Length: 170
Image (cartoon, rainbow, N blue to C red):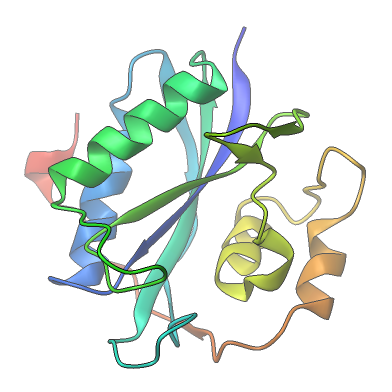
């Protein structure tokens, strides 16, 4: 049975918009997974250390047969394909993939917290989720729209669409 999973994407190194576009294609190719929708990309100030470039962020809506931890493993594998290095908390990165929402699941273990722990504080994750589904709610019933209205401003700027690379399509 397929589950709706919402993945946040972020990058601020090595052509961030191209990193995200490539990651979207890789997510769409996951086994037992269909890409239902992709949000626009947004630029924003970094969270945490300010001595790094601005980020490009977006989100995708997947319908997947993967269980949450198996999906997390795939997200981390894709990050590694993009050369992700974890040198500094909230530091610069080629690609960051976060499992934001996984169906109606609430989970908090040593590897994974769903919904994402910082979601309510991240306009660069909330706005793309609203673009994907304006009626989206958390498992506790709280509307993403309400969280977005209460969220701190991170100087979000909508970016023009990135042309699709024909070599990355299925």
